[in-house]
Length: 347
Image (cartoon, rainbow, N blue to C red; front, side):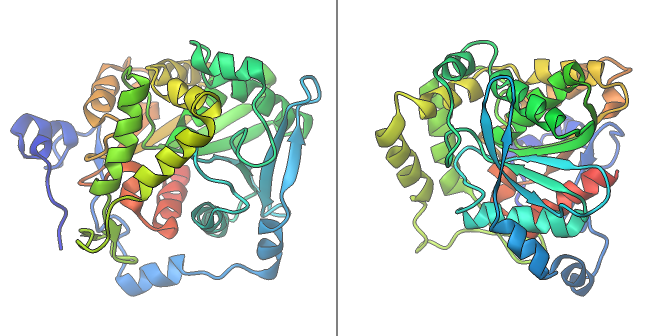
C-alpha cells in the first residue's frame, strides 16, 4: 500500500520543492524503502530485546540539579556505562518517561539502536519537577523555551558533560533547539540535533494551536510494523483520544502549565533558535524530520525557511520529508522513530 499524496505534493512546483522526483538536491525525501533492507533484515536490526541492565535503568529515574537555581530535572539515564557522546532526549509535552508506555519504548529503542549514553528529560511539571512562576511567565514571553534550557544546560555542565547530541519530538523539538542555541554559553559543544515535527514556524493563537493538536487525532495513520506502510484508521476506532486528553488537561491546569507551554509553542521563535544554534555551533548539523501532512509543523513554512537559509548555513540544516505523515511521524512505532533518530545522528 503506498502513501497518499497531498494536494501540495501533486503540484509540479511543490513536487520539486519536496524533491519527489529527485531533482532538488537540497531536500531529502524519505521513502518507504529508505532502510534499503528486506523486511526480515529490518526486523533483525530493530527488534532487539533490552538486557537486564537497560531494564533496570528504565525503572531508576535520576535527578539532575542546577546548583545555582536549584531547579531539578527528572531524567532516565540509559546506557550509563556505554562509551560515546551522550544524547539528550527532550520529550513531547504530554508524556512522563516513567509512566508513559510510548515514551519508555521510544527511549528504550533509541538506547538500543544507538548504543550510546542517553539522558531522557522529563518536561517540568510532568512528574515531580515543577515549573517556577518566573519560568511560566518566561515561557509566555519572547524568551520561550530558553527559560527551561538554561538551568538544564547548567545541570548538564555540573555533571562534566561538555559535548552532546540532542533529539526532540513535537514540543521536545522546541526545547532541543533552545538547548542548541544556548549551549555554547555553558561551554557545551553540540554536534547533532534531531528535531521531529515541532511547532513554532508560524505564530498561532492559543485556541488555534490547541485545535491543531486535537485535529491531528482524526488524521493519524497507523503503520504496519517494519514496512513503514500507512494504514488508515478503521472506522470502529473512534478518533477521540487526543480530544479527551486535551480537554482533561485543560480542566486540570488551563490557567497554569498547559497555558504556558501552549503559548510558548504558538510563538514563531523556532527559526530564531535554529539560526542561533547554527551560528554559535560551527560544526553542528541539524536534521529536521517532518510529515508533509502535519497540522503542527507547517511543512510549507519549514520548506520556505530552508530555502531562505544563507548559503554557508544551508548544508548544515538537513530537511527530511515523510510523504503523508501527520504529527510525530503519523503515530509510527517507537522502533521507527528511533530508527530515524539513529540515521540522522549517523549522517
